[in-house]
Image (cartoon, rainbow, N blue to C red; front, side):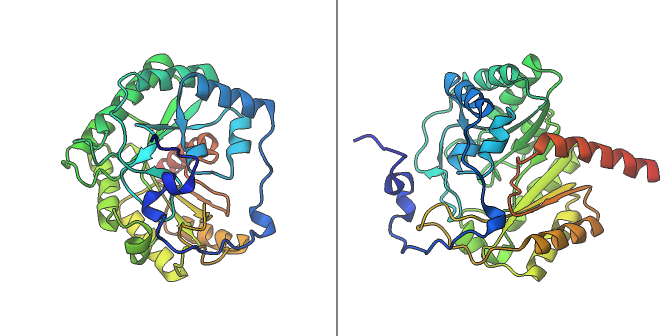
Length: 317
């Protein structure tokens, strides 16, 4: 019998045994409108035509209507099935299919047709592949560069935890403009939220990017509302700055299904503003901290601001 990823128990077999967590009612500041615009439909049609997967759909992003209406979409390469089973994530878990050698070209073609000035390319974890998909990332970056030389490229990678340390060089040397890898949560919550990952390995990955190419922008993000406290968030900020990370995103965790990690609380807009102020005080070039912030949300506009912030900082020094 073939697997139907629309059925929750088949999409998340590793979560089927978990007891249900009540999904609390969302506060007014977290609600978004259902997507209906013509721009949304055009973006969706181009994705379907090129048989591309987007994290916007797979992760159930609340901003999909706004982003797709503007022709912005985050491409998810290397399939729609992840080898990890993080308790917060709505991407399907299991054994993926072989990598598609034609996918980099299809991504590049879609970027050109959408006329993107900035593209975000992410992926599932591929612990089944020796290099974790690093070469596939590199090929996708190069394909986009060939077809859309004026487009800036942001990648959101896995942690490459089970790979040789050299694989990160493969990705960095392909020349993305922004290298993003999300820490997702505070270290104390890793065993229950991100059990297949290691907090300091993720930090080290981002630090390594800067060692290979000091001029490359690095970016990372966390979710709040998972059970962390303010002090632990501040410590993550300090750890990120010690690794010379340029750009921090903080957004509200939203529970995809009752089987996923519970929402501990809805963090207020005022608290997000306080986190943003603290992060700028710690030296980040760019901070996005709002309830609906996601890694790729307003990524193009934010990249322009990030670049301007670096130039301003250089001018001051």
